[in-house]
Length: 209
Image 1 (cartoon, helix red, strand yellow):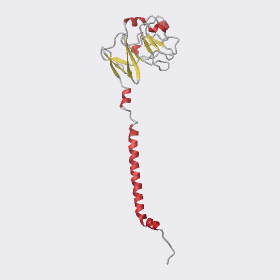
Image 2 (cartoon, helix red, strand yellow):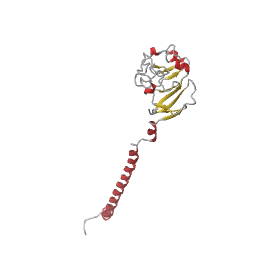
Image 3 (spheres, helix red, strand yellow):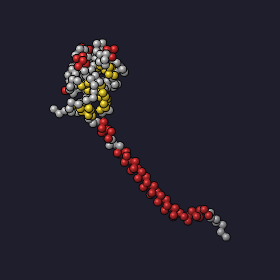
Image 4 (cartoon, helix red, strand yellow):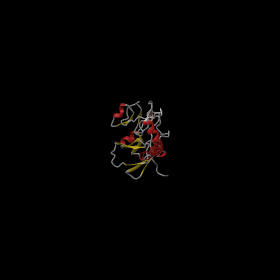
């Protein structure tokens, strides 16, 4: 009688080994295929993310604004390239005030390049009545407040209307011109724009010469 004993479990394992090897190879290939599909699936949205979204494209687009409803003395805000843009309809009184305090301004003649050439004038605008500005302080990028009907005189004596930046105290007149002795170094920026007609403007591009 043989003294050699064989474990039943080991015997069964040896008998099924070819089948197990085949199954293992199948599972390995299948896993690789599924993994590859997963990588491709993940890569598609990742690569697609390199393309600018519709929102990103729109962020650089021109903005058309109907100004027919703006009342005299009123300021309205629109967004252009993720920046606030102010549109102010100035009254004759406001326009007259602009020439009375130019000795208090840093750049009264708008010599720094903060506006298109068509707005390099006392009113800093294409049409005197309408002021269009990027509503961001030229100091540290805060947004100034619009103070009118005498409220601005608290900050500049004799000037009833203007823009005041509460962050660091910069002051601007109703043409966006910066006053002396304040942190802001430059006038507020006038964006490129054009009038489509008497009641509509496009912010973002100038009319062709």
